[in-house]
Length: 201
Image 1 (cartoon, rainbow, N blue to C red):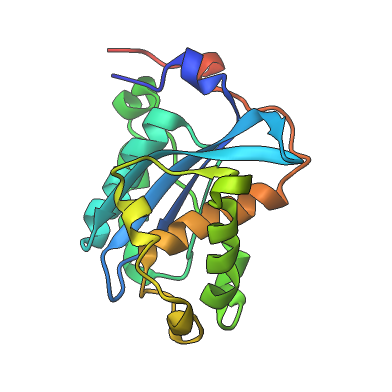
Image 2 (cartoon, one colour):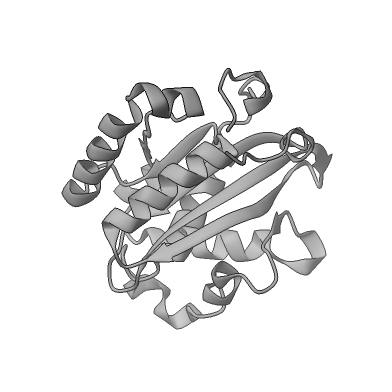
């Protein structure tokens, strides 16, 4: 089965996945990588992949596929969504089968984002993301034509205090990944999938 190439994987210090469950808009998963080279006092964060769906089960299943392909160091999101938790448990039971383990499947786990415990969190993290996207000091690079980049233009400054989790899952997932990545500055080198033992079909 296809995997993220070793050559591409080696470009990144870290690869993180993040997911925000469906709310007023469809749920969203994003995978980002942190470049190894220093730039403007930090490391650039690069968009790698995305998926959007209003179907929580479908979103969980695609997260499992993205986890297999990119081997993110961690996944960030909301761990208190009962439906998502049930679908994750079902997927992990399937992944424990001998055939799945031989293919390289692993248990899918999510770490809770501290942003979820902030009041008016959107009013905090959205301006920070916009600053990282500022062309003059850009350290966050989104793919042209991606849904995520289009969503970043939608919220207006006057709307920020009233925006709640679930209003923009796409932007929430990006914030989960970016803020966690920037907090974990001193983590060790990335264990790439190149050293994982798996059978390729």
